Amino acid sequence: MTAIELHTEKKVFSNIALIIEKRKFNAASSANSQVITMFWEIGKYINLDILADSRADYGKKILSTVSTKLVSVYGKSFVEANLYRMKRFAAVFPDIDTIADFTPFLSWSHFCENMRIKDEQARLFYARDAVEKQSGIRELRHTIARKAFERTEIANTQLTPQSLVPFNVFKDPYLLDVLDLKDNFLESDLENAILLELEKFILEFGNGFAFMERQKRIIIDGDDFKIDLLFFNRTLRRLVAVELKTGRFKPQYKGQMELYLKWLDHYERKEGENAPIGLILCTEASRDQIELLEMDKAGIAVAEFWTNLPPKVEFEKLLKNILEEANERIERRKYLLGNTIISRQIDTKEKP
View 1 (cartoon, one colour):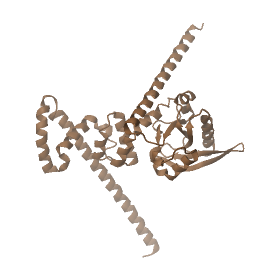
View 2 (cartoon, one colour; view 1 turned 120 degrees about the vertical axis):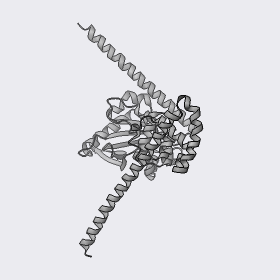
View 3 (cartoon, helix red, strand yellow; view 1 turned 180 degrees about the horizontal axis):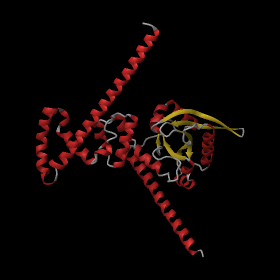
View 4 (cartoon, helix red, strand yellow; view 1 turned 45 degrees about the vertical axis):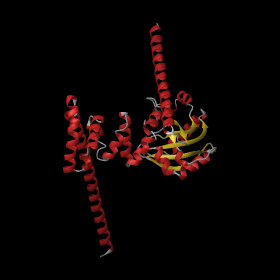
């Protein structure tokens, strides 16, 4: 066989194998989707026809018997406990269309884990996140336990309708306990720890981020500046500059990041890309200052980073308090905006 024939044979085999693997994946996805839909339909039937209204007590008695018969014919997927999970599944997701995008990719175990979450938006968030990351059950549990949804919601409270920072991109706080930093660490220690554990950091950072450069050197008017970390987000198609600050947020950080973003937009942004955005990571965020500075309108977000994860109850309480305070600031902002509009209307009417 000549070299040309060998090359052709390899190419043909590779192309056919690609078709086979693609169809195998599509077949598996389709089969998984059918199974999830079947479980939902069974759950809906149980809710409406077996356990509804006056038939509830009778339905509970016969469900156990029916389960035994189903197991003997169709297997262990139909044990009584799983029938009750199907019942809850249909109750939690009354409209199957809301999860249609997830059923080809998430297993029944994923949905059983997801159903434990009380908040509807949180359920959809974690389902979408699991699909994007191709998470297994253990990874999904880890993401839920670390309250990714709640931390994303806190980050979103910084953003206004005029924000240049997209929603659902950043979190607040970031949990950097995986870096195993010692007490009294410096900014350089934090940067080195992130680079040593880059994969873990990117998993915490979010979906679609690719590391570009550390200590990105830029020269403006003969002065040297360095951006701590530079990423590219494939989903957003934009550069993301990250500044690391130990200690409390300071207002001058805004001007520094604005300068970096202007430079990146002018010299590094490629055709087809969106404008760069920035994230300032601080040990402690000064949330009232951040709100007054309207950082999001300049394409900048600020978030705390925690190097130690508190115990579960304390962690949940801290996040709850931060989110409540953030929502109070939003309501205060709306109230002040409303009063400003009313005052302008009054001034307009009083003018001759």
